[in-house]
Length: 443
Ligand SMILES: Cc1cc2nc3c(=O)[nH]c(=O)nc-3n(C[C@H](O)[C@H](O)[C@H](O)COP(=O)(O)OP(=O)(O)OC[C@H]3O[C@@H](n4cnc5c(N)ncnc54)[C@H](O)[C@@H]3O)c2cc1C
Image (cartoon, rainbow, N blue to C red; front, top):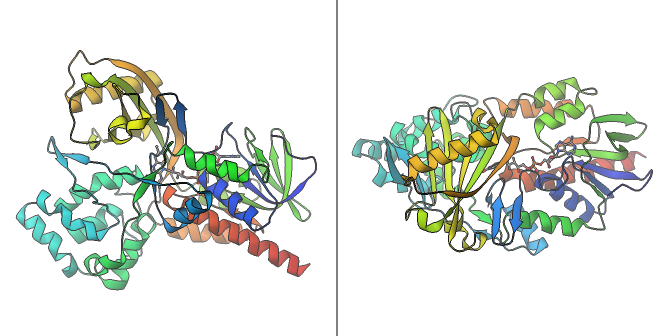
């Protein structure tokens, strides 16, 4: 839609991903006048379900951690969450090994489930986690932390799950930012085992019509209340009197406050003329490209498979292969199965044809498919720079970013990982309310 001429908003939200929509929702609940700008022609950002009769494909994440903030939002929107149960396996020394149900890197209470996958000395090492001394570093790579606390063999089991959650190299990821609760647990209790009753991982959920259900519900809740501009990319931000002007190729919008609910590189571009320091800090969070290739087969051509999701690494590339119908039967027409291969990093930039060829090669090799297995149809979805990577020192950069943004009163950044999207959105809406109240009080 186009925006009402010369209307001034209390809040302009840049980006209509989950964070932006949830932020707009919270702010309008507080009675603020809000507008949302979105560069793409559809809302949802990384969350997008392609729906057509007999087929629903997730173009981005297939599930979301059910945090208290998300649960609150779902209750208000009357959206029902469906727990995701997956039988996962990883490849070790060329063999597929089934994961115990519920094993999650962020849940020390689940680590005992690794026992049967480990030899005696590795099991004893895992059980002795409480005897390992406290870390002394301000931050530590995720890979080093798990190896130090749990031992090499247990880390070998957990590593593919960390790759699945973050996409990037665990040797580069910051423990303090990627798994803040574990970092805190070690600091406070000196051991994950001792802290395990306080730590649990939010279970992952999806929705009846896929992740798009959540985006549709938010869109419906905002309809008629919050003007939404799809296809309107915020290019530049400029201060004009008491207002921020957000320029798009179509024109400009004026608002008392702005929430940048887009990726860090996108926010960096918007701020480049007015705050080079914030721009430099935002540009220091790497974002990995991500592609998913979906291959449809006649069900009868695929072997029975005890694993819904397979994780493995080959030639430095991490892959995730999942079966759609096996987990979500209502999403694929009976008689067919859609296999999805997720590719992260540079390989995700390959052409569609090359990606489809790569996926078929991997599927044939990993599932030992016969030559007669034919792909009925294929789809490639790309999300360039979709996966933010909190690398070592991320928390320091976030702190510096917060202080750099204080030089732009009323401008807030709300990007981050999926798990924190709704909580970040709520927090940004609270900051905006606080800022506007202060402005009013100061006259
Ligand atoms: C396949 C896949 C799997 C993932 N799995 C996980 C996971 O397991 N855990 C996890 O934490 N994260 C995961 N992510 C990343 C996660 O989806 C995102 O971090 C999360 O969705 C962030 O939501 P968001 O609303 O903040 O950003 P986004 O969903 O990226 O939305 C930002 C929106 O801003 C818009 N925008 C950008 N620039 C502008 C501009 N200048 N003007 C207007 N609009 C603009 C974009 O078009 C987009 O719609 C995954 C991503 C993908 C693609």
